[in-house]
Length: 319
Image (cartoon, rainbow, N blue to C red):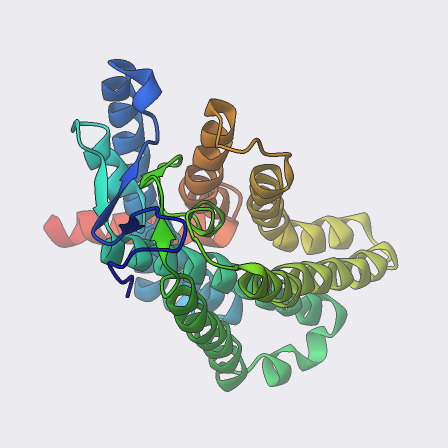
């Protein structure tokens, strides 16, 4: 993908591997960070797998909202697994290298997860809009085929776009230092190493941001404007609280996802990634995936009920 040739200005082209500098500055504290991240990563895997298992085992949860939640949990596993295992290894070894092919794969799966999650969160907001604003037509509008179509489109668009995007970036010649001042292969950082014009790729990234990140966010906002308007018109306080409670978990997840992403990508950056930039990026990649299962279990009566029933069945079957 990257050819080992000589560029015009005499800089040697990077052809074999990159060095992810990451948290090297922490020295011996890297062991402590390894232990913290290992616990968080295992909690993320177990929490999201538990949500998937609960929904699969309980027919009462076979509804559109929980169908999207299964997809969201799969995404969170993919999102963290695209970078955290590599980071854990690098926190223990001296040579923090990654091959060009592995770097491309890491960027590909990371970006797919992020873009698909934006689309899925918008689909979940639409589901809540239909449930609250058009309850009589809910089962007709949010049929199994419609849900599968929305989820399928979310995955297909992200996978297709990222194939072209990643291939384009890694077809560029990389030259100069092979040290990447990050703990994973983030596209903006990798593009800084290119010794070719990247203006067209930057335009593509801007288009992708508008279409697949900002547009879903605007759809979520529009859905909740309609939802809030409908809730405020409800005659009883109990009805308003019940309607709002069905949306609260989704609102928290959207706030976490977009909030951490905005902090990570919109804060002014220095020419090389600083320690504070790394910590913000780390929060962006580990906070939402580990908290989402907790939010959807602790704040959701249906999921808590399904969890109790599953444990009871397991205990009785063993007895």
